[in-house]
Length: 295
Ligand code: HEC
Image (tube, rainbow, N blue to C red; front, side, top):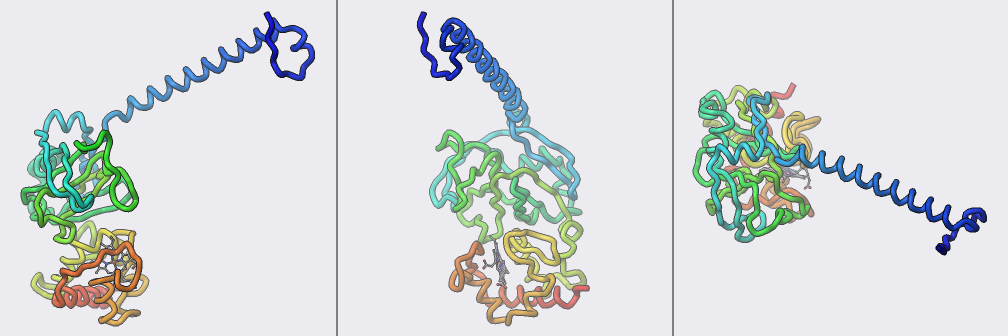
């Protein structure tokens, strides 16, 4: 038996049998090592086989339901529609939103104590939407992309939208019209907006004031990216702290930066060409009011 191994040690070289035996032992050790790693990984993937959705009421977890359990209890649908985020027609498998809310919360989600639902994504992104909007037909929580084995990457960030993605099948049910489209959805929080987001709420104004109307637009379209007094989304700057936007920008420039920021900068903030002058005045009235009542 002749084996030539490139080892400096002369003794090894002179005794080929010993060298071969050492080599075999080394190979055996490596194989056992790989086997152990494999077993550990196998165990790990068993644990996270099914993704889960958390249901919260006023920030407190009431249920954590995995996909298998959701599929056993809620009717699934195959849907096909134009997805404005992908900008093309897509096919998904998923549940009707109202069925998921009913299964997760029971009748509680129809209790008028609650005004909104905050959908939270794995990366901390939160989309808030009023319950009256969510009751409309067209909303689905989808869990499988029928055109792709896994998921087709979404947005400029090329992330996967799974495990859960909230979509709307109606043509006008877009983010522009205040429908929430969170991907990587991880929890659904049933809230009374005033309590959960009190720093954003303009307390002490009537519901038909321009301040309140501005607040409603802000709640529907801006708070997912902007905070007021530290409460809200973290994608864009806080618009009331440490100083209000109205303290360091004039009204004309604020409206310009809301209506078409892309005219001035490369930015993550979307243009809002559909907001009327009246809408912009209302948003400004809201900013001014929040500046006045800040302590
Ligand atoms: C997708 C996230 C996103 C949404 C939605 C969004 N913004 Fe922005 N906004 C940003 C970011 C990020 C900036 C930071 C500056 C920039 O990149 O232009 C910004 C900047 C601004 C500014 C300018 C701040 C400054 O001093 O330069 C104003 C005012 C503003 N947003 C208001 C709004 C209003 C009002 C809405 C809702 C109608 C809104 N934004 C919706 C992300 C967003």
